[in-house]
Length: 113
Image 1: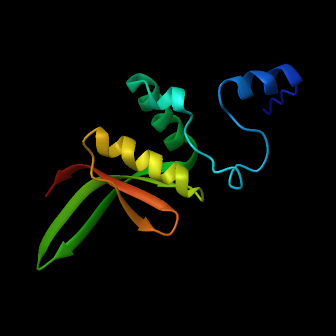
Image 2 (image 1 turned 180 degrees about the horizontal axis):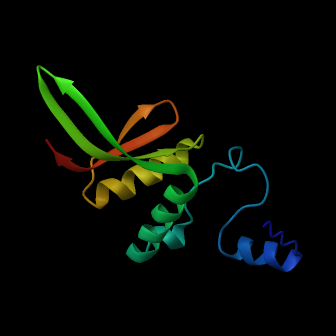
Image 3 (image 1 turned 180 degrees about the vertical axis):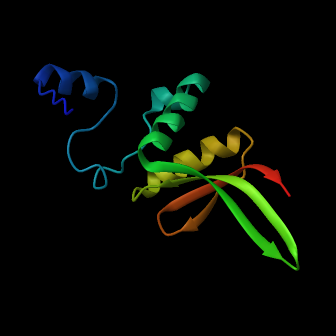
């Protein structure tokens, strides 16, 4: 099923929330300041970004006959500003985010062996 909503009022509402119209990369896509000021909104925003542009996977590798296994969150975005903002939010929530590829931000979720 596909639902398409087209309305100038919807666009105006989204703009009132701080969302931008047009090319998001050229406009330095970022998390709106009203979200960054509220802990619950930050959690919901990260959850939404993970739903659309992220994944959770189990990483497993062997070093000197010892197997390491852990869950990792990974988010892909071409927007450097968005990646920086997500990096800071994750860091403030106690994660240890890092850039694993050109457009990819990752963090371990939990450690296990």
